[in-house]
Image 1 (cartoon, rainbow, N blue to C red):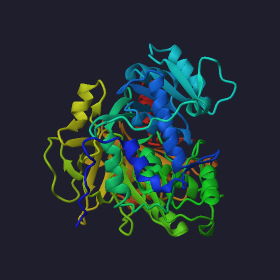
Image 2: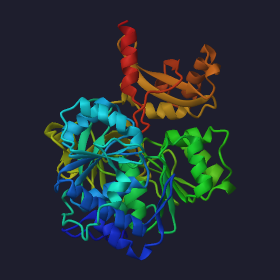
Image 3: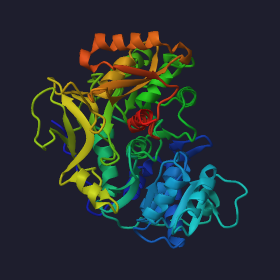
Image 4: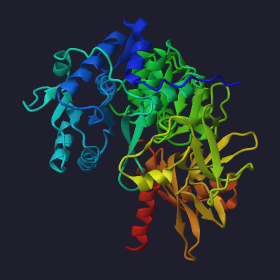
Length: 526
């Protein structure tokens, strides 16, 4: 039996909840970043100061502030400080362009921008391009700042802490995340205070089994839904310590934290695990203290999971979440990992597979659209009724992913709804072909799309990145086709294969197959 988890009270402020939860841990490290350590007492004090400071700048309840910062100790302080004041932080991807931020500033009507010094020029360029409402810029870890911006540290130190959090409701909008769609403008996904509580209560504790003894480290950054759970709501809800890293999560950057700071739990994505396993600098099992790893963002190929476990003796818990559901709702679990699947529904969530007419599929091995019902679903996409209606359907949220359920009840990823190929009248999952290609020793990464042959029939085409680019040849291309044909149903093998030096990806590391499709179209029209 699954334990019944009490919902948050109707009047609920997530920042206040975390502070109260950790009052006995005042001297313990909550965060360790590239510069220093933040204890739980420091965190509580600084959250109260940001809360009061935003109010003093004239930001009112429910108004938005932009949070454009690299992962460092100032990030959770800024995010929770806004929540504490009933102000809505809009946490945005640090890898975007000035045009993207110009859109987000206008769309969110952010009143204040909190920004890392390194990102200030991009933000200022965005402000010049937009009809924004930003009244003040607060800069984290800058030097020699202009008179018209505030230094984050000085601002925090000069503001007395708010004595109590603003009364907010569990179902009140707490924060926004922008969902990175493969096409179109990003969508402002509005989440509640309660949603942060639910992801920790349903997944961090009962499934992952996180405890206050853990040291958590996430390659996925805090501005991602996945990273926000990994680096903020999960560890703080159990009193653990979190390692934050401002730089890009390259294999070497991750290895340095593995060996220097000895995290016990690592949260990554399949592309990152593949890169680490391919690195000549991969540390030994003895040099790290990893007890468990997590993966999300895209489905984890079986081979990567098996290789990682063989190397480090710990499992990778693969799951799927989304910006709309805030974190993982379908997952393997410790001691019950079946590589090549995404596991089973997380207790507290219900999932359904539906056909194109919306009928629920009950049989095994039937590919359908994945729908989720659970208490962490977003309220809506701000100012976008059509997309909200398309995604949020009463108690159910449409994921945009296709899955099938095997005979043992484990769910297997079958690609994105818009990436699925129908070859010879049958669905072919690009992911299945990609995973198979990656089992070949010469292949680092691959992406598969559908292209029309001379008869107008869809055939699979593979784009392949080799571990050694110099090995590309016609002979290897034929070898790879034969390799796939031997492992999958013959209709699934890629009829065409092209070598690339890198694949187009979103900031979260997901392959942008639509860009490859556009590349093919431009060739045929060229």
